Length: 65
Image (tube, rainbow, N blue to C red):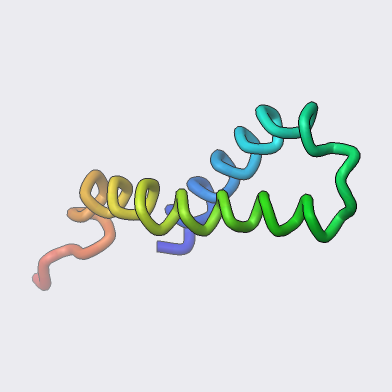
């Protein structure tokens, strides 16, 4: 699960910074951090982790032998 979270968080963080940096780069660090953190938490909670869990369920939750 940690590997899934790492790659999902990295992808979302990189993409959001690439898209939003031209618009909010001059904002104070607190405003910047709040925006990026909100995007990351919402995207992970409602999109990336549910999709990742479904795609990798056999690897994440193997049946007992």
